[in-house]
Structures are given as structure tokens and as C-alpha cells.
Amino acid sequence: MTWKTEFGESHEGYAGAVLPDGSEPKPVYLDPGSGADFRATKEWWAYSGELGRPKAASVRGCCACGWRGASYPIDWEQLSNEDDVLDVAGLYKDWSAHIEAVERATVPFPAALDELLRQLETVLDTLAEDAPAAALRAAEVLSRLSQRTGRLAADAVQDDEPLQWEALGTALGIPPEKARARVTHYLLLGAGGIR
Image (cartoon, rainbow, N blue to C red):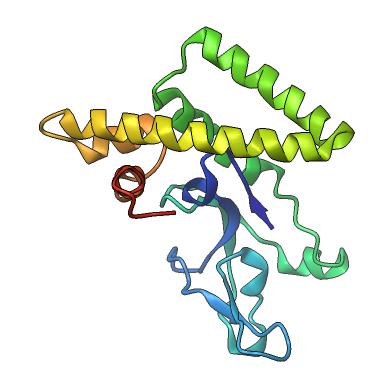
């Protein structure tokens, strides 16, 4: 189970395993059945000591950005009596506090734009239910507008010398390398390199 935010995969959260020595285990690769599509996980439940895997001593909230929360001990004996149910509410709360800190560090929208985006989301959600074809048309118009705005903003960011990827990443709520990739993506759109 992963926790999602508006920041996408850059801040996807999960309940991660901590080994007895305090280290974080390597990912476990799960075989979903037939086929070569293996899924990697670092979630706590995959480290039960079964199938030659290490046994987690504790669990903590984790984020794809590298943030790690406080560790909480795992009582495996109690879990075996409760059908492997672990209360992750505290972990989620820790991760949510991290996400709130990321949000506070991002560049804020003007209040009018923030309200307009909320209204637009409500209208579009209703439109998708009531008139799906119109909602698809609106999505296409918004996509073109988004690409145009992204190109203009990427050009403007490139003009800021020297460009500080760390600061831009913080302003967007994503790691610096993702900020660079986003700017490059929009610059390529403007150059006709992406369709």
C-alpha cells in the first residue's frame, strides 16, 4: 500500500521495514505469477523472515524522496494472532507531516488562481459524470493550455542565471533532477521535440 500526493511518484509514501541493526533492507522482488513482470517492494510486510528474507524489527514512514520517519517496533507475535494487521496510522501521520512541510516550501499560487483551480476541478468532475464527451474536449483544451504555459515558464526559468536546480525543485516540491527533467520536457515541447 502506498500513499499518494499531488507531487506524484516523487513523494509517494509507504510503511518501510527497518532491520534489527537499524538499516533499511534491499527491495524484495515479488513474482506475480506467470510472466517476467516482477514487482519490487520495500514495504514492511515483505520482511517477515519467510522465504529467506530478512525479518524487520521495526517499521517507519518512508517517502520516495528519501525522507524517513521515526521507527516503531513490530510485534510479530501479536501480528500472527491478528491476521497480519499492522496499524500504520502513526506512520501515515508522520509522512503527512513531511508532505505538509514540502507543501509549505513550494511556491504558492496567487489566492485567485488557487480558488479558480478548485472550482475548475469541481466543474470538471461533474462534467465527467454528466457529459463525458464535453469533459474529454475540456481535457484536451486544458492539455494544450498546460503545455503552452509550461513552455513559457520553462523559457523564463532558463533565462534566470544561474539556474539553481535545488531551489527550483524545492519550489515545485520535487527533487532537483525531476525539476530539471520538467524544464527540459517543456523546452522540448516548445522546440517541437515532443508530440
